Image (cartoon, rainbow, N blue to C red; front, top):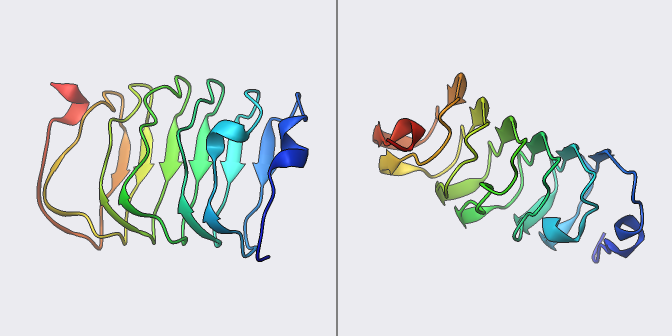
Length: 143
């Protein structure tokens, strides 16, 4: 795909699960354009570079492993039901504030380095920061 349009998805008012894995979706993927009823989104194995500014109050699972995400993760703190984030195998360098309800976080094989200031995520139970360049993690739980 050289151009991917979200327009047909915006009118799917009852959409709860969206699996777009293993495509060639390029460039930015504006999560804010998706229906607010979405609970699970799988974007694994694409060419997504940016997730926009998600305002998905029902989202529980976000997987976007093996894409082209870089820089800082989007602020996902407004996703009040988000329990699982998998952004492994990207080029992410820093984390934005995490939702307090988050219990599973996979950031393996990214470009996280130095001491990571982990804000939010007070309910984290499973965390994978393997294959990065971290020397420490601070601020777990926003304390």
